[in-house]
Length: 68
Image 1 (cartoon, rainbow, N blue to C red):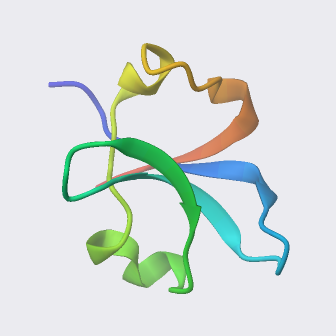
Image 2 (tube, rainbow, N blue to C red):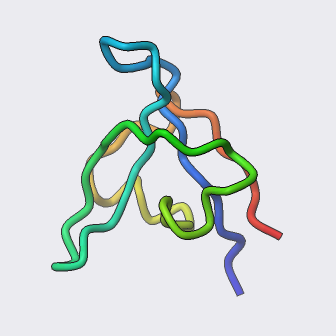
Image 3 (cartoon, rainbow, N blue to C red):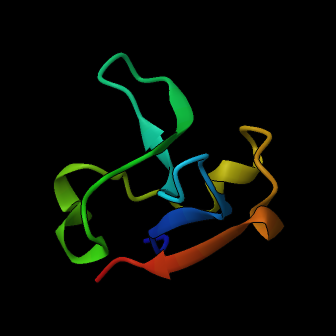
């Protein structure tokens, strides 16, 4: 099984909040900032494998944290 990660953009939004790759309820992948702390993200942020590369996101622009 592939390892899964939270993908956090190295940049922040205009208000300084972190930006993550997220999956919408409709299945679209996008970037958005979130308000929750990293430890509380399981409901807000989607864990993805290395598949982000095929969606056109450059992994070098992100810090990835492995999901346990």
